[in-house]
Length: 71
Ligand SMILES: [Zn+2]
Image 1: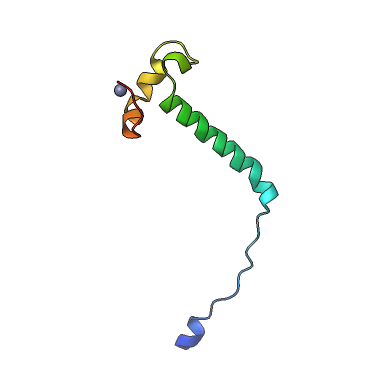
Image 2: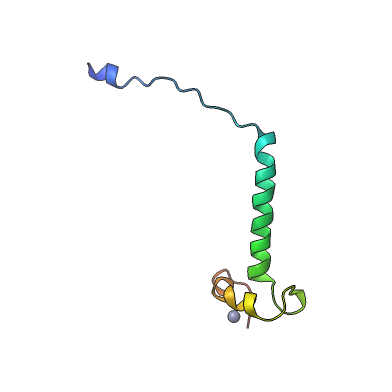
């Protein structure tokens, strides 16, 4: 086999993923991200939906890492 023959790449048919099939998962992932941002950034005080400081303390280091105001 020559070097030129070894470099020939056979064409591969890439399957296109229709946007309509992906869009619900993109929306779902976006909502999960927004939920994560809420729990890290706003789950305390007046905007808290879970009583106590458990969630706040659980995500406290992430909160400081991302620069959300805390204390
Ligand atoms: Zn803090």
